[in-house]
Length: 375
Image (cartoon, rainbow, N blue to C red; front, side, top):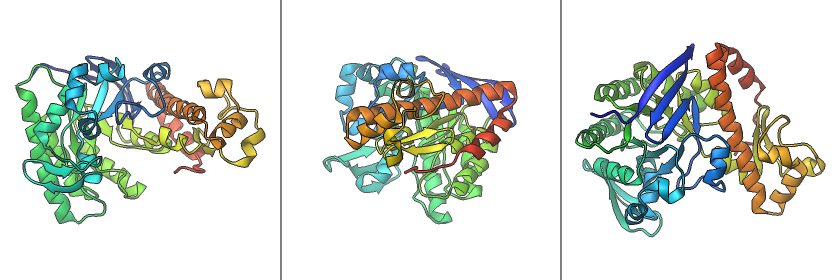
């Protein structure tokens, strides 16, 4: 098949990897944080602002965009890049997680999932081929194979049956790509819940299918942080070193650094914009809740030395006022700061890996980060 994406491994420090992904819409330097634009928009942030933040790639969501605005609208606009005015790479998830977490009255069959969507209860269907068709219509640079995300907790028997179905679906997604010249790069998703044998089985089976990249899914779904780390640790050794690895839906700043140390290249998470809407900002020392009264008279920025717009031009006192007054500008500025923090953290990780000093940076950063109000 014609290669639609390449990955170059440029440096390593332990298991931490410095790489470069090349796609039709541009290069992605890894490790990378990918802002989440579930419905074709990173909440409260414009594409121009994302470029100014040095965001390299954004996410779209297959399920949400399939339900609204729908594929007829998306075809009319020529895909998600044109629709949302973003000219960089786009990764879309398969919709599997949302089908299993949001949809009503779902019925899982070998063909796929019949469900009622969460907006109006209309009957819908998504299967492996449907998910691939949707992601191709969106114009994704990187698409995810359709999978079942098992609930947490679940027993070994359920997780094994779910994994077997996910692997059959993954094979169908892979076959979908074989006859198409114009297609997205396709990532397989490692599942297996909290069971080491299933994680290994999944990673080995997907590797044999030879995807362009691999994701670790079914994490951050209610399990403990230790179980989340173990799911990655059990998966990573069986994934090829010459393909990118993506931990889906993760995480806090220390979690991302710890997962970089475990060989993960790509991350996405809604936390930067989600907690911004509650007045909470990320800093290297931990989170800061700007709603708290002591900040009312503080003249300093969210974080000393930060070069984002919120920190160079505004005080903590002013931001607290905006949040307390429910002014939209407040959540926008904190969102910009939080995204800047996440993106710069990955830039720092890349530099430390290149310099061979990542392990020292990892220890110092994780030790210095004290969560204060993450929600």
